[in-house]
Image (cartoon, rainbow, N blue to C red; front, side, top):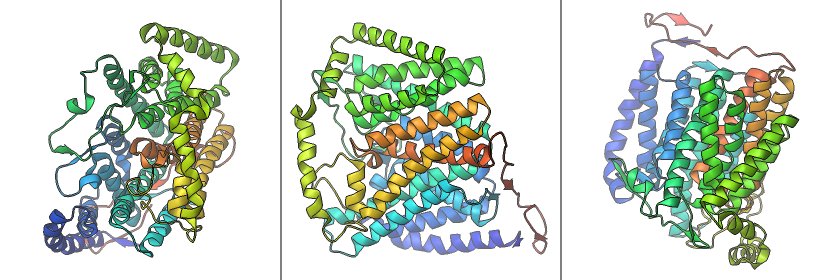
Length: 500
């Protein structure tokens, strides 16, 4: 039972308490950019404002996730807000933290009541618990300055991805909302692909310079890499591998909307984005991107009928021929990289570092060395998300990461089996293909440490959880009622109201 007056009272109290804390912490934050006191006070203030304005809550999920997608794929990842936050000031990261606050405020006020016992929600909570235990494990031992700084920075992405998953899972209350968010994601990915194509054919073109918006500054300098004489395109990502994998995992979703779009225009737009993504992925000259593309394509292709599979193969052959004509030697270079084996110095460098892991794990097998403490500046580059989770969070964090992949794929497949609608079955297969592609490439690069791939994973997981709650949890052919939502009535402060 809630009174309509108490949210306003709580909001005013929170703001009154937060403002002096910020005024005290701000001078220190200007000298210590990673001041957790400043960020915590800012978060409390945002929560107070959130409860005060109360109307901008979980029902705006489509807009919130669309803005996130734009910030994630079109704003260069080395850009941050001007000010003391530095890496924490990345626009996509801050927006995701705001989404988490929005979810917390909505649940606190009882404005949304999603179905109970959603396995996806429990999987995300377990991931958050594992991250918390890893952070506590790091704080329990002496840390170097590099490790302490990394631990402080790592808190915020861990919270942000949880916010993305929970807002998508509980806020997308209808299948149409899930489809619209993913359709917009495909369109934005097509725009991100166009930037990569320009980078490949015009070496003087710099998307990062073009996308330098007012109020943003660079936190790190990124240099366009080359491989076998080709410029590795990067778009708005932090690395060509991240760029390629992020687009590759979206290929099955684009293919789904090409076949099952709500209108002719959406199908044509999805087909255009699909073609752009398929063209630009090889331009990254990334093995991980090709692995993600193969895994996602084969898994989604298993869902297609015979004629559709044949058409897909023909499109692939024509596309490969066109790529060979436009960019000679590119496909041959990628083929050589895929089958070079241990003769590649980069592969030898990665595998030679693996022998150091048992020594680093001694005494930290369960909860790890600490969240964000394994910094390449102090140790070495570890291009393996599973081993990275094991080192930083121990067996608990590794189990949480593997569980997320399993829960995402199994829930998507169960929803697909329980649905009788071809479009729903196709969308579930596409989402499971995207998650499997990220799971496969997590063994080839540190997928969770990169913002685009890490945030996309949790967006996919949230969409799977939303589809399961609306389409798949009651059995074949049955649909769940949308979760109850309530509005705070404009009533006198002494009137009592209950959610309907």
